[in-house]
Length: 376
Image (cartoon, rainbow, N blue to C red; front, side, top):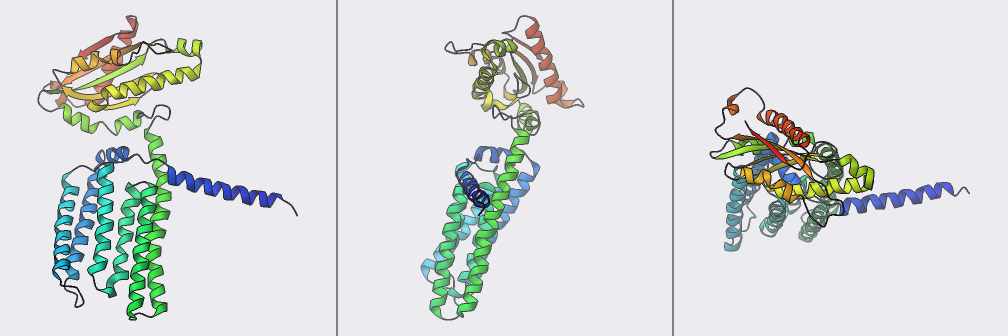
């Protein structure tokens, strides 16, 4: 017998298990997801859809009260009243607040799962299996906005609730075993099959989307990612007594670093500068790596603070303990909130970027390790 086919099968099995393990343990960037949703017009539409679905869950809780078999005990009525108030509050939050980060999406998902499961205890037994189908709707949220580990936890919980509902339904003897198996299997396929398959696909698509916006070496935005993320910073820059500033930061004599220490050490320098620059300006706007050793930051701050922020970059990037010490040349363009250029017919960020880039080359021509800025 040719052993090669068996070898290929074993390799495929190992590859498949490795892929599942990688999918299950892959990190999920909740901050990136929130920023991505909040920076796009469709993000607001998504929040409205989530609000509608949330309110629909509350409407179902009200409608179920009119079922002939519904429990009308004080506990059941009180709990459903609480759920209705909660879903109205959560629905309102979806349309009035930005897309939440890690704790927000996890809290919403857990609330949806536990709220749905609790209705199984007080809804008519005849509706139990059908009620479990709501877990498929919740699974969609897990699919798009939570990690694979949270999705698996949801699937286990939803499956357990469905099996328990099927067992209680069977105990009543009102549904034939064949019909019960059919209903349960259909619901389980919707609960588990669709979200699981979708999450695998979304994971691939998300990686592709991120790779088109993120610089792979530093994890910063690339030029395309920066263009997609500057709107909020631009808006803040127009507020009274604030300003918009564009900084172009370029490592001085970087070719000499590569020639003397090698490209691996050169990459380490690029990553180190990116990390320190992100820590320094990240709270004020967005930062990208736009060239080999060049970075671009678009920030908004008060007009009293902007000069200190710009001139503090050189100090923030230095550390006497660095094995490879480098300096940077910085060009900056500042647009105050009351500047006349806001009302001119061009992209203010593009204009400021060109000016800042020119200022950076002036800093290099003057010997580097300095800041040159211009107010527009």
